[in-house]
Image 1 (cartoon, rainbow, N blue to C red):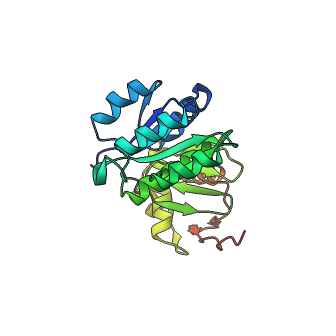
Image 2 (image 1 turned 60 degrees about the vertical axis):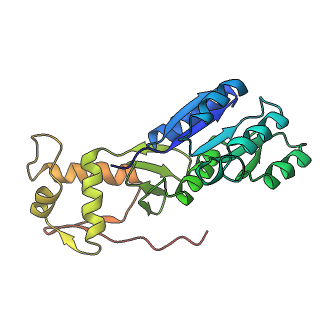
Image 3 (image 1 turned 30 degrees about the horizontal axis):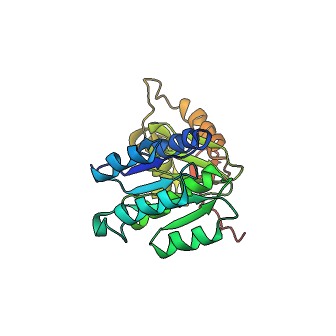
Length: 233
């Protein structure tokens, strides 16, 4: 099993850091926090950090110094970290300087935690540290590796191992009618109640959690998954 990716939060405001850490940890990443620049020095010098988020609770000069010393484009070299710096809206000069020094991204506060988590995920993917299996449905996107359902509304749900197995079965057999026996054999229930009559309730729960109409009941035959038409919006 591949080692988990590591994200460091340096002097990120507490109200943001808590939610961001929760987002990242639920997606399988390790999160380490340093509330002061001197704590960050110890954390970053040990190496092994993939992405560093520097909050605007530190001065821009302190953030740029960390970037120069430990960033992948600076003193950290190829083994260095990718940096995301959070700046205040009026700090255009500081934003440009950070980008010129090799920051991977600079975003303005106040910020959206989910957007920031997505930017971090993008950096990890480019580093080959964030393998995903994303399935786009009508109203949600599913990451099968983390078993997360991300609804268009912004809400999130966690799939159970049995629901992941059931969804994988449908994805592997698009437009094919799967009988109840097929489902019981390939994606058994998570408890002893694996009788024929329990399949209907499992399908209903999965449809509800995914907010999808792509899994249909074929009366007297079984169930079929019809991949949705890609959205254009």
